[in-house]
Image (tube, rainbow, N blue to C red; front, side, top):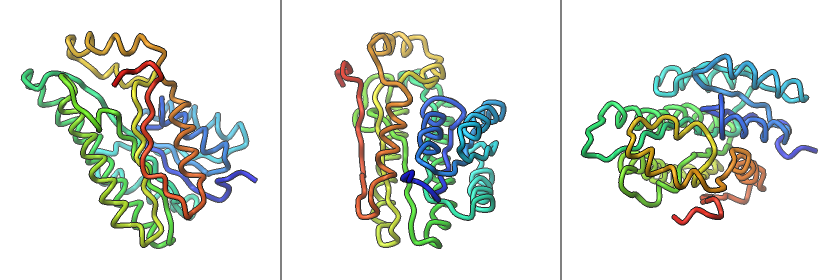
Length: 247
């Protein structure tokens, strides 16, 4: 029997990369998956692929920076499948630059998506999970949430926030049998780096991206491991770097 048979997972930022791979991995374990992102055409393709492989998937076009849309995502998931067992807060943007460059629109965008978007979806999901008496929040952070360096300051700030929020949630929700996991990837071959507009930051990242970096499936497999553990086991934090990544 598949380990997630009868479970329902909601994945944000599911139109590509880690989110897409995670949806496929959890569906392969038997979960019904609700995939959310802004790019509806990509979600449609993903749902067709999962359903074609014998899984169950629903797409919801949603911008998690809109609190109402984030709450509606969770409502639709519960309406369609009757429950929400897993929320993977994967939606994120990474726009690196030195703070002194003053790219305030990019700062705002990162905090809106990486922090507030996570909070909005979590707020709605926790209410459902408390009613059920169980649930699992998986928050995608970053190695940048452990250390900051030149050009990562604001992005790192959002991921430090994710880590702080996640640990607080873990303590707040443990008596409700709701587990919380932080997954902190190093360099992964996804679209994330394409968000960077600052040429100096792009150049600084180029050496790292030339290594044999992680694939989205590597992170999806780690997430699947976390959410398929027995109820008594709470995997709180996983840090995953490419073998060749120095820091």
